[in-house]
Image (cartoon, rainbow, N blue to C red; front, top):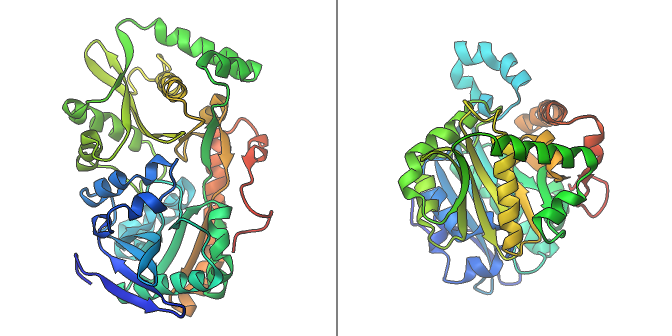
Length: 408
């Protein structure tokens, strides 16, 4: 299937069908905006346009569109990886174990994989109402048919909260998918209404730490934080700061490039601000923030590690983002799936998320079912343990599922 084609994958009963679009721009006007979550800024059409115009990771994108009597009623974005590097997505322990393979036979670590959902954010099937069982079966069958046509053996519904997978639970299980917990998301409730009220509501130790980190920042000569709406002229410096962070990251599935940041800087269809720290006139840290309705997200961060610790840059950029979100009337702000210790100190709750995984062929599916859950569980436990003050952090995870059972 080439770019620009619109191909019907499956047709079901009741006037339902699923077709493949190769760009978000091929959707009829208003469909994306009608179906996408109104308060999740990562699901703005402009974010997907920026992904398509950049080289963030996948070799291609597609959008399965469920139509009912000709009208689009659901959309599932897909990311196509022809040769996904396994050593980029596992934890440090697994990466050490894979290092001899990477050096002696690197091709063995490159696997064809199809991600369903959002490469950069929480997974959703875009729909104005819950999918019924018939539509769910048709959509899951269309995902597997598309994977076979594209020769992408491993299929993953990525980072879905329990309620978002619930309408597909039976269809996924019947099709051979199995659930694996992924890294939790981080979300801060902003019901306090003001920044001072937010600080006052923190437990005593995080509140004292917050005051101390603000004083550390204020004591550094020449540092200031600004909120910018125009920042294209800063992109080379911002990209260098972002790469400093990614050079220290455990996982690099979605390494952003200059083209993606340039698209976001242009801001077509996006409500975005850049929280940036300057040392004199030079950027030394930033947090890119997106907004939609009452929701906000600190999407990506960059830091100059030369002064990051001494000036408590990480925390102070996040404090500035929290202040900005409060001023805009947001009720919540989300951050990335990393650095759990400082984010729980900020007051964030951890939001449980899941993968649903399978392979289009039975034997590799059996191997995946045996090997991947323990490997991913180990990587997840290490990520949480490394950044958590104690095992109690696991107990702060908010269960957002219909029950305490796995979603499929």
